[in-house]
Length: 472
Image 1 (spheres, rainbow, N blue to C red):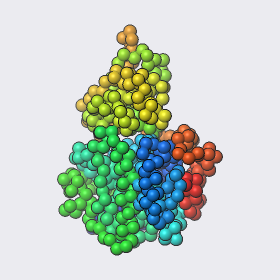
Image 2 (cartoon, rainbow, N blue to C red; image 1 turned 45 degrees about the vertical axis):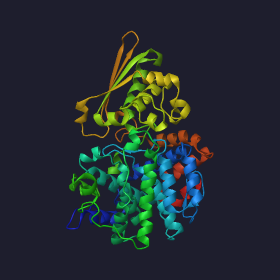
Image 3 (cartoon, rainbow, N blue to C red; image 1 turned 180 degrees about the horizontal axis):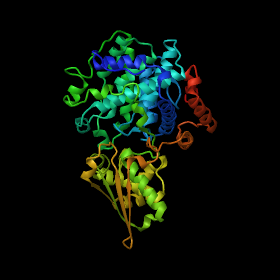
Image 4 (cartoon, helix red, strand yellow; image 1 turned 30 degrees about the vertical axis):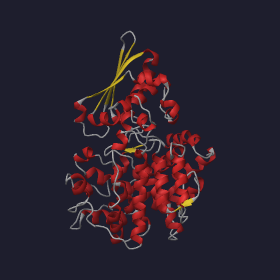
């Protein structure tokens, strides 16, 4: 059921589409991708439960008390819905293992999936309205699509301002929640407008390698869900929150946006289908180099002890995020290591893999890895700036003792997890199994099988809060 732009303001068109689109009209690919991202995000949250500062955050949130509305994942107990979003979304993002969008960039489902499950539980406990599996899939597919359309409509200025993808997330969470809670169009628009008041997020915390980078999903989910609560008690927000005189595009990007991009192929193209599920718990910009280095090692039997120099050629944008600064060459924090070409490549060469266990305080201070990281050189190739992709191609050159040179060119879609080379269902389950040992509480292997089957059969479930019984 496609919707086209009419005389209505574009925000009204998007809200009407969010409320009126039926599960039965979803393309099969959107259903399959949504199921995979649900399971993948839950896996990332389980592993993220032991990431640095997550336990204190869980204790802080639970210590606030309040109404028992929504489950705190892994740590258990129930807290008010906005507080649950703060911890659960942050937990899902904490290891940088959650999915990213290839075209628009940014971490999508670490905000959207926990928020959807929180809203589902809130809907049941507070509103007496259970959410079915079909409705969860539809709401998530539509919410992610809206999130990404808002991001993709922003012009080139958006990449230079320092706002992150999470800036847009509260609006998408509010729209998704409006649908799940049975709001009409006016009330949904108000929730989206109130959520606009909470839009934030910045790249500086990522550049400096601070823990604020992983907190932004939690703040975005909290803002989106809080907007639903506030709308319920009568708060109103601007209906023209995207295109108004001081709307999102004017205020944050100086009017640099493409309005047609917001509604183009609305209802037929789902932007969430272009999400990559990560095989490595590090910045997506490093994945092409990790993938290429691991293949050069496997194909040529290269030993880390023989490596004299590694050169990575990339775009200006990716260099500025993961290749620029002494804090990336010699990281002292886990976030810096995750956003470092130098560390991730050295780790791949020495350990033959890049996994969760490679990003601990002990691992990032490994003298062998740190020494090899200094042999990595990252350079900008301006030709790669011309490629209209968030994740640019990568060229790798490894020089070993004796002067042997090994090269590999890696396109973004070659890396496992890319929509053109997706993880299978079995591979997503395997990732869950790899994440489970890092849970803050023992996570029985049998539960993974039960959760996985429940997700694959989600359209048969009348109340999705059954999933949460395994997490709290």
